[in-house]
Each structure stands twice: as C-alpha cells, then as structure tokens.
Length: 243
Image (cartoon, rainbow, N blue to C red; front, top):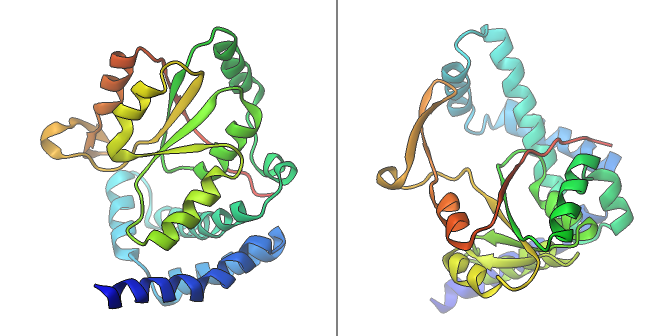
C-alpha cells in the first residue's frame, strides 16, 4: 500500500510541471498541440475508434459512410481541444475566461431574475462543450453561489489539483455521495447546484427511452431531489467556440 501511495505521488509530481506548462501556453499554440494529439490519437493509436464508429453508425443510420467518418474526425478533434483547454483553468484570468466562455443575454437575465426572487436552482448539463469553463463563467457572472457535484479522484494529489482548478473563481464542490445532505444544509442560501448528468445509471433504477436509435437509461434522481427541495431545474446546453 505504501509503495502504491509513493507511486501515485511520483506520478503527480512528475506530470505537474507539464500540466502547468500547458496552462500557460497561448491559445494558438495550445490548439496547435491539440492538432498533433488528434493526429496521434485518431490516425496512429486509433483510440477506441471502432467503438466510436459503431456508435455513430447505430445513431445515424441514414448517413453515408463518408458522413460518419467526417463526424468521427470532428469528434476526436473536439475531444483533444476540450482535454487541453481544461488545463487552462489553472492559470487563466477572469478577463480571458469571459472572452472564451460567456453566458448569452437570455441565460444571464434568467439567472438574475431568479436571484432577485431569492430562488435557488439546479442546473443540469451534459458532457458537451467545456463544462469546466461554464462553471467558472457562472461563478464570475452570477449572484448564486455555484456548487458542482463531482466524483473525487482516487489519486489524492490529482484530486487536490482538480479541486483547485474548479474552485479558483468561487465555485464550491460537493462530493457525489454527499449530494442530498449538503443541498439540504445549503437551502438557506442563494445557490445553484450543477449536475453533469449523462453518466450511465443502474439499469433497474433508470428510466429507459430511445435516444439516437438506441435503448438508453436516464437518471431519475435529479427530478426527485428537485421535488424534495423544491428547486426549479434548468437544463443547460453549452456552445463551444474556439477563439
């Protein structure tokens, strides 16, 4: 056990300088590096390519093979951009954050209106767009105290790093196992609790529906929590724009 702990510490301290280097790279260089990672991942390593292609064929049976390949390539390019963008959170300024991720006028007006009514809320998001940046932008722009539900990492060193990244602009985190307890404890303050809710739930506790031509389980827990605490639920879609 001690040896394993030492290995985790060595891995963290070995990679930490590279992570900070990524965080201070100018965006043009970061996206240039992303293109290189994309080439390695898609063309050379072919990481999970068969799985992605199979899922795309099932989801879009009406599309030609050429169109499926185009979507696949765009996905890998997006995936690499998103992965490297996340490290910018370690050092990005508030001004730069709002330049690269912002709330549109309608969304901001809605959150301001709820704040004026002293109404807390729950925000539900999927793994689309840069949800890490979205949380930062919300904390900078909105009056609600933002809490994000997260699953702590098993490596305590990287967990502390992720915690630091996600809380730099005032966001607070709630471990998944403490969700309901902490939300009940926070009921007396103006807050927003964000869920990234597209993980796969237990089959016997899910609502099943057809999504993209496939049987898909959907979480029911968020609606149950909202009814218990009497919070409105807002579903958010993030549009990713490279600048």
